[in-house]
Image 1 (spheres, rainbow, N blue to C red):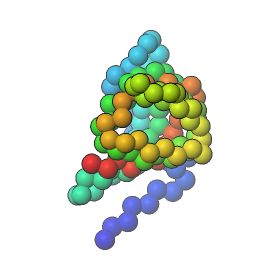
Image 2: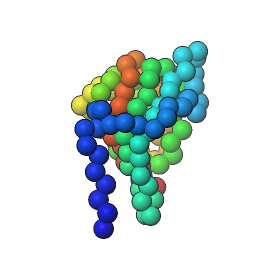
Image 3: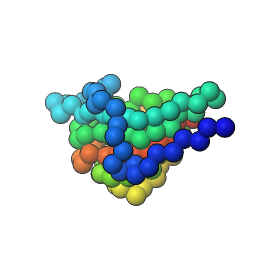
Image 4: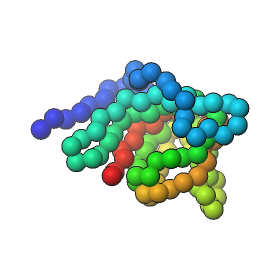
Length: 113
């Protein structure tokens, strides 16, 4: 059995940044990730995003713990959820809505397929 272990996730070196998939507005968020995907389809990692607005495109259920930053997620048809460092969120599968990142966020996450 292989155990994956990330140390000091607040300073962990991530992959090369790239643009978000569905940006909204002129401010283009950049995202970077360090992740693993297991044979059973579970993906886990550390993810970072710079300020900006964009549509969430993940269809899997997701658990995440915010390590740093500040943002708002507004689910389609729902109330805004204000998120900051130290918060944890569980998104049900097929959760759609708008991310508004005010201060670069970093989170650890698990996607469950």
